[in-house]
Image (cartoon, rainbow, N blue to C red; front, side, top):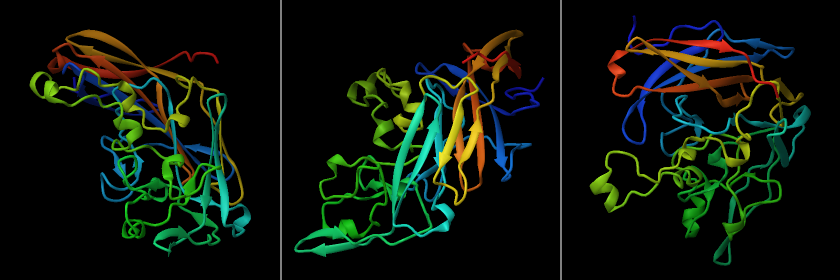
Length: 328
């Protein structure tokens, strides 16, 4: 028997990791992941898909936009659907503004607007922006969205001085009815990618780290820690519960000549972990749908968990089994 490992599965790449729950009890997290790549004619199944044990950033960790969140979320209540990739104008026609759309049947319908490059124009002690330049490809990650404060330190367009504005590019990723303005209270952070743990949309769920926590809980998480912290997709990209299979996903604005169209497979998995000779069963809901539009790759991540109850040293022989999928 091999301690703290997951047996290979014919459909999934597999990996396990020990974690801790709110009370410090050991929890065995089991992840299975699969992926497909679009050939231009059909989706081809990938033989192996990397399972990430730590967040992967596009630049400096903790400051730049996040590309992948780790694949061992302790708990999720909804399937996250996240997209990374550049916006691409139809037929490579230069445009100064375009829209990208993500659609998942009965769960997600989101559009964002991409604006061409602009620069800051100081004017009469204030600041404004130039007209936008035309483009055929443009980045869509959060370093190009509104930011500069705690809710998106990777972005720009929020500052307290003219110099502060000019230190970061003019934001170019917005919701369709919004644009940069000096009063940014009415402008939301827009994007399709995973939210880093330092974004306000996630940190609001971290709980209270006060003197009482210091004296009575540390190093455990606060009593008011909210599991919604583990959802890495923006709230408007979180499904209504877990995707069960059969749902259609469509992505437009990320290719010069086509709409990416994918149907979530109707499949379901469970993990069986043997602890001290006893089998423990855990369902593995679909935690994350990840689309890399630049590479035309889609991955699905299924994760389950087993509480070890102080016997993690006796954990062995974990396997993933396929079970009958629920009907939509």
